[in-house]
Length: 83
Image: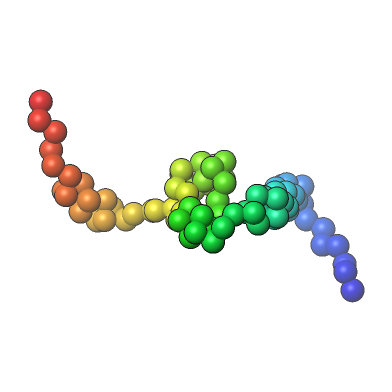
């Protein structure tokens, strides 16, 4: 029982984009990541550089989305620049 769900054109565009992204990710894992050693995956993760830049703001392991209080804390740890 494999009934096709009908979506509006706007929603279908997102469904198609998601399916394309999943297919590209699976192809990348099969063609590239499968040949890596465990150490490489442990250090770098399985993201491609393109995926990191497009989806994770350039983070190659885990994206960081700090709250304003965390950003303020780290800002205070940074010494001020001397002119």
